Length: 356
Image (cartoon, rainbow, N blue to C red; front, side, top):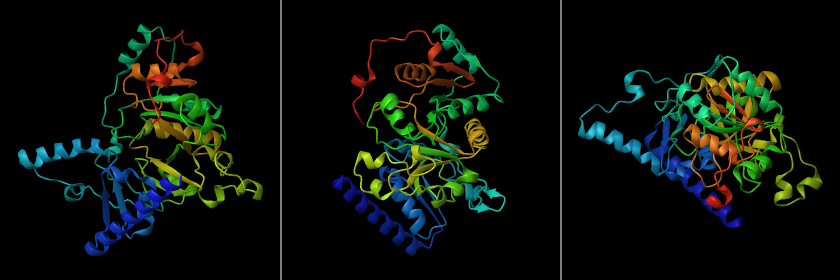
């Protein structure tokens, strides 16, 4: 733990010095980050707070996978002789700071990073029929209410809808979601679904227009790459006896109204959700907010430890059946685990995938 903490502190110091030097020398207002270190969301949050850039933008697939975007752009511009355009040059760029009427439009060319494949309703229903998997089908207007009710009842839901995300973070397209108010949700998700250590943290997905009500942040964080603290009004002060605890015992102490997504230092790795980018996911959060008063969901990637995030309906169904998820949403089809036929493929994911 000491070694990890030391590496983190040095990384933050180096990133801050580089960002401060860049801003001082260029006087630029906006900063873009990419590369694997840009996935360090704690350091990113400090850059946003402590360096006088008006905005920062972080490439959602900031690791090696993001090189695919660079190759495509290089071919387009250098070899096909096409213009190297930006949103600002196209006249569509707008400042993204909040206004009295809510957050300004978010001019992001990646539009949420939902760049992967999507299956049609007919394809999904055909898959479920072939596998004799019973389901309930809902109209798109009904689905958010149905899912919000399940979540408020403490159920854990696998959400497979829309196009798959590009990058290492699940952003509501291929996510496992739950109730952040539950003190047990973090350990249950880790031990019974992800099959990993109980202390591993999860991220909150929150409506963009409400983020400053719950976190010390008033900016877009669509790709879950910024960390900020829970606002003091939502925190719970620990007793002297609780402060004297150490390790896992101290970690398990409830620290806020949303303990499932609050780290030991009262911080959280935040994903802001806009309706124009992911309407169904936003509507589910809104239905949950209306029901509970909390505009936040626990969001973790739809997979088990060491496995890639699910892509196809077959991937999602297999993960659903091999773990202790309660429900699966495949577009507008809702599957109850208790009603599914016996599933046995002769494999145990705990043996198939090592800890990540």
